Length: 172
Image 1 (cartoon, rainbow, N blue to C red):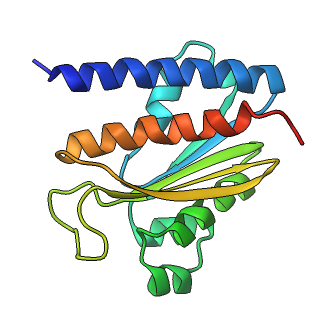
Image 2 (image 1 turned 180 degrees about the horizontal axis):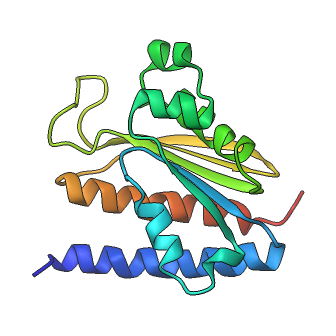
Image 3 (image 1 turned 30 degrees about the vertical axis):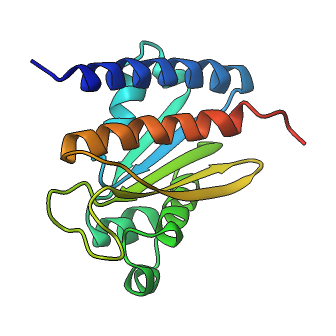
């Protein structure tokens, strides 16, 4: 049976996707997601909602560096310089998702879900996020505790809540 935290996280993710859908529908905006460590979990959370085709345009699962370059146009030199898990790459992923879709907003997630792959600079649980909206490009790095599943679930929720906070802001 799933852990109670996992069930709570799932409920919060569903709630965030529902709230995001309402705002995007109201603004008549479409969303594109660019995911690495979440492997499509953001897209799945969005498309779990009936009627999501009215606001979810497409999802890119770019797990490998080559996929980030081929599907999103992320410069291989940028990945080589900063690493796939970096704000710079997350920002390029979000911009690439917009460029390679008909969406008005995009979110990107890239990180180290574990259990291996972490370094001193980027330990397991390090996740970089970026959100592209008509108001600009925003990014941040966050560290999540827990196992691979917990990191991926927390990253999915955080990416949706981050975009929601940006699109709910009044235009300036």
